[in-house]
Each structure stands twice: as structure tokens, then as C-alpha cells.
Length: 299
Image (cartoon, rainbow, N blue to C red):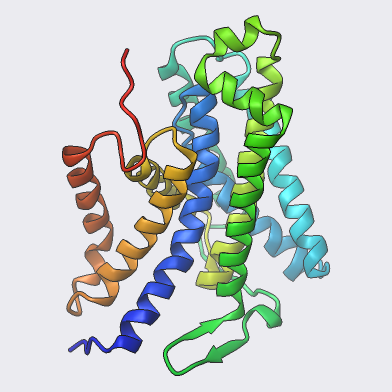
């Protein structure tokens, strides 16, 4: 029987914020691409897997220092995003949206099966640096350094991206392209360059989130990105499709809801947490289809 003490509730709220920070990052990356191309980027989930295994190779196998491994993982994620843009989507831009959607799903399946072929179907134990595994116990809260790292890094990325979008010329170009690609092209904005930058940023964020995911769970697998990517899109819908603040808010809400569904339900019901999350999504779509911070679009 679960005893609902204040300490227990505070602990679960904190756990939900940690998971929510990772969902918020993934939702942020997917929102960037959706805002530009109106594309539900299923392949975004595969980049989580690639990022986690790249860190595994660089840090655990090759023995690179932690800062170097993180920088290289971010760089490799950005490179993957650029390759995806050039190979998968460059020629499809301007065509039917469904063609890009199918292409994205196809590339996710391709990357997942390629990872399965390279690393084998068995999960891998993921070892983060010792300083990130330090446990701190307080009267009302117990946490590891990796939890603080996830929250701090996620907030820093969100703040940096918000400033980037609002204060830089490329950010203005991204917002203009999101509003109307044709109008942005007419005023001299290089749409192709904006799309490439969007993929680079989103994929770099997904790659470092892959490291966070592995460090938090202590395990990585070739198919770890699928459900994470789907839930990130759920976070987007909850927060409001196309809204960057909404994506972040939706990620934190999703993380807390999922944690609560495990922490406060009777034993045996925790296995239904994914179903509970999607049930809440259905309720939000019924009550407020545009999401919490989204706005209705007139077509």
C-alpha cells in the first residue's frame, strides 16, 4: 500500500520534472521541424538512439573524456540532421506533405534496423561518469547528480534556443518561414538554408537527449527512440502544435503525469502508464483540440 506522505509526493514531483525535461527537449526539436515543414518527424526518435550509442562508443569503449564525448555527440547529431535533410527531405520540400511523413517513418525504420544490425538486439548497460551517479539524500528528497544535470542542461538549451529564435537573424528567418514559406522567400530568405539549420539544431538536441536518457535509465537499446519520439509528439499536442513554449510545457506535464501514473496507482497498474498518457491526450483533444498554448488555425 502506498503511503502518501509529503516527502513521497515531493519526490515524485521532482522525478516527473526530470523526465519532463527530457520530453520537453525532444518536443522542442520536433516542434522546430514541424514549424518549418509541417512535418511530424518520426525519424527524430531514431536520433535519440544514435546519440546514446555514440556516447557509449566514445566514452565507454574509446575512453574519451566526458566533455569531449558530449561535444562529439552533439556534433555527430547535428551532422546526422544535415544528412537527413539533404538525403531524405531536400527533394520532397514543396511536394505533398504525406510524402515527407512517409519518408520520415521510412527513415526511422531504416535507422532502427541498421542500429539493430550493428549493435545487436540485446540492450546495453549504460555507464555515465561517476560524478553524475553521486547520490544526495535530503529530508524530503533523494536525487543523483545526473538529475540536476538533466534539468539544468534542458533549461539552458530552452533558454538559449528561445533567445536564438527571438534575437538572431536566423531565428527571425525561421519564424518568418514558419509563418509563410512563400512570403519568406519573396523577401529574400533562403528557405533551404533555414530548413537545414532547423534539422541541425533539432538533431543536435535529440543526440544529447539520447545521452541523458541512457544516463537516467542506465540502459540503452536499438529501439529506445520509438516510444520516446511518440511521447514527445504527445507533449507537442498537449502543449499546442507549433508552439515552442507549448512544447516545453507539454513535455513537463507529460513527464509529471507519467511519473504520477506509476507512483500513485496500486501495484500492478503501473504497466498501464502509456495507456493512461494517451487517454489523457484524448481528453485534451476533446476539451481543447488546439492544446494548452496552441491557437486554432483557419484554413
